[in-house]
Image (cartoon, rainbow, N blue to C red; front, side):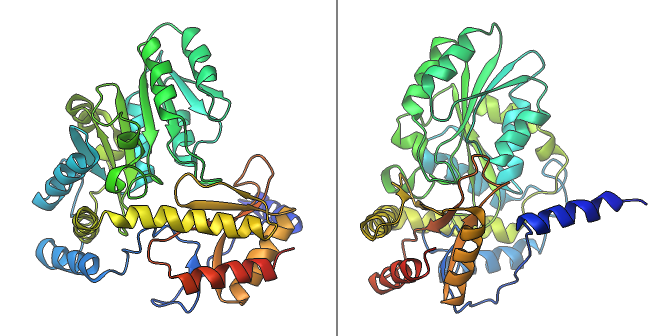
Amino acid sequence: MAFGWIDEQAELRRRAGLVRTLRPRPARSPLLDLAGNDYLGLAHHPEVTDGAARAARTWGGGSTGSRLVTGTTELHTELERELAGFCGFEAALVFSSGYAANLAAVTALAPHGSLIVSDAGNHASLIDGCRLARGTTQVVAHAEPEAVRKALAAHTGTAIAVSDTVFSVDGDAAPLAALAAACREHGAGLVVDDAHGLGVLGAGGRGAPHAAGLAGADDVVATVTLSKSLGSQGGAVLGPARVVDHLVNAARTFIFDTGLAPAAAGAALAALRLLRREPQRAERARAVADELYTRLTTAGLEAVRPDAAVVSVRAPSAEDAVRWAAECRAAGLAVGCFRPPSVPDGISRLRLTARADLTGQQIDRAVRVIGETRP
């Protein structure tokens, strides 16, 4: 029977307790949200929602076509110019999602015969980019510049190293300066995904490459998402102008995808301008993460020290993680739950988002609920 194997797979997932379900939320949820990625608390900010509404009224509900046909508006180019300037890069190119931006950067910069050195902890979008690229991928140990150096030394020809700047599972940061040094020894490019760094790390939230002194370098390319700190949707690739020009001509997820909706571009631009005026939001997000980590570990829980705004709390098992997250939700707290197959190391955990707009009372409540529901 066609697709009969799907029933078998569904039963295996059910037995393993790994069934995923969609849970539609209301516009204003009664839950305290430590699960989403709204790091700066801007998704509902009046300036951001007004930016989205104005853009929709001006440019329409959709971009009407691919970026190379009718999908590029003046708003898109304005966002690209300001995003590049804020993060310290020469140029930027906006995509319909951060996922599409990562696929574009990796596939277009790793032609046939090239080597891609990929960190073992990279996000799925980078992994999929490696799978689709014509180059050969070598996966190396997590956050190990020496492993990157050895892989590059064994290859002759074009090469790039690919890494998250802040890893989405445990919230630890990559050693960007050391990675860049390893790449430069062998004439390789460095491509980093700053989805969890933009708005949190660097001066005023300018991102991890800016903090590491790599922004604007001619051998460094960064990708970002507009859907986390900027409270909107979409993604972008930042880098030298010649790299961006190459993506316009060679990146399939740019050429063949409909352009980002104007409302999302307008919201992202408004959030970016707000962050320029209120750079303390980045510092506040980091402070909240540190406080959550300190208070949870003081209470006897095992957590990973956060380098940005992601706080990872270990659970004894996948079943315990799922049950723990459900009990938190029942107590009014939404938290993320990472378990196999999302995490290949088999260590299940709760994933907490530290937001700049969390009050002291909300932090107290979150710590109390997590502690009271612990397995």
